Structure formats: structure tokens, C-alpha cells
Image (tube, rainbow, N blue to C red; front, side, top):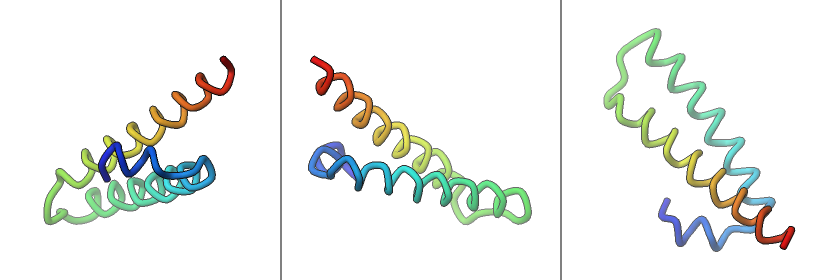
Length: 66
């Protein structure tokens, strides 16, 4: 997901997407511990996506307080 796509999401959609991605990350970590993943880079990509979503959420919070 690109940053432009993230900026088009509403606040509720961002919160929902963060929850979904955190759940997916947890499942990936469990699967990686139990058996080998096809591509371990999926974990880092998921973590980066969560960070992008949280960054956009925080930027909106800061802009709303001004």
C-alpha cells in the first residue's frame, strides 16, 4: 500500500487497517516460529505498513489540534 492510498483512507479505515495488519503480523510470526515462511520479508513489509499507517494517523492527530 502506497502512502497516497493511505492518505485517501478515513480515520476509521486507518484504525481498522492497523488492527488487521497487527493481527496478520502476529499470525505471520507464529507461522514463522512453527514452520518456515515462503518469504520472511513479508514480516518486515507488514511491520513497515503498520508504521506508515500509524504515522499517517499521528500526522492527522497533530493537524487536528492546530
